[in-house]
Length: 485
Figure 1 (cartoon, rainbow, N blue to C red):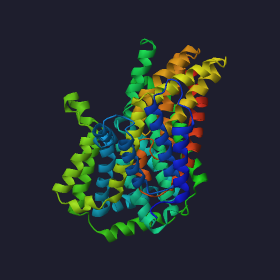
Figure 2 (cartoon, one colour):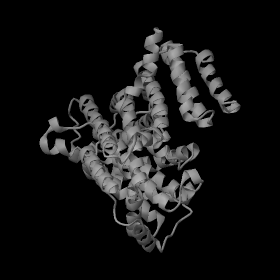
Figure 3 (cartoon, rainbow, N blue to C red):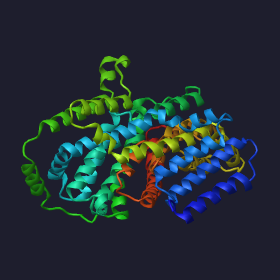
Figure 4 (cartoon, one colour):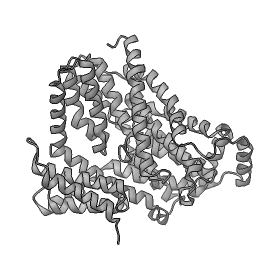
């Protein structure tokens, strides 16, 4: 049998209950409700591991095409089901994974890992904080959080973990790799919340706030950065400690790490030509992902993040650092492209069919009818907005569908516009902590295999609570001191 009977049965039961038993709410189209039923079933199957996640994605694509929930035409329905394979974000993720193979094949990844260990390797937690610092330094000039966390930081994390023989294929991920992978990931949403230019949807938040307040609230780059600085730094300082407590690495202290790393570097010999090429391409990627050409020469010189990834992969193929067989055998990349495309497709059409807008409007109205003061009412709105991300595989889609409705509802309930704007702006990045499909960075790091699905979701929920408390309490006091409310 190709599937696990019990989790498959649970997933099917949930789908049928929503599809056939639960009445379609007023204001929701049958197509939207039926797609929602399939989406719930797919998520349940993924959680229960009814099949490998890529296989579940294939079934999801088949069902959307077969059941015609997005279009009555069979040919248009399957086009819709396959539409996310044209999404640049999907390919940015997959190609980033392929590029990371070059770090391993050339040995440059290991060399970088040993250099990191020589400097920060006395304790595993010290290596974790070095990753956090790297994220923080890159965030202001790297508009793609996927490129930053998945394309730049994660290959180094993998190299460090591998150098300590922490490898999922060997069952030794708990030695160090699990902890470092989680720190690598959870630094990403926090740094994304700290700068307008740290993730692509942040400018959308700025635009939506301005429109909702008729330009009375304008979140400039400096205003955003100053507001998020203190809560962001506190969150970055606490996060590695929380994850260390939840998933302590087996290798905690490495007093001889510096000499160990130096011996390894000596054994590797001088840097090879392919390593030099890989390092140069890595520099080109960083240069383009950071948007430096556009900063120096104007918008005409801007290069899209996904195009940049393809430039990197093309250069690796042209120089012979990677062969096409290397790319074909990078199974995790192709697997990630498949399952992430299916989830993005379903989340996109839940939005297009109006289910998310219906949910947003209903929730805002219901909270308003409770008669609460603005503070608890807006807190509930913000939490509902944040945790609705369990239903999304894209922060852009989530913000587009829900931010304006929830922000407007909060203002109507009496929240100070600037305070609520900052709360919702922070939540728009912190919601990335929740799932392995929450943003482009998550499938890259989750796909490396260092954590189980349960461990990822548990860490995500705990960190979402820790982060939002920090931003509400410390951030709220800080914003009051700054005179923002």
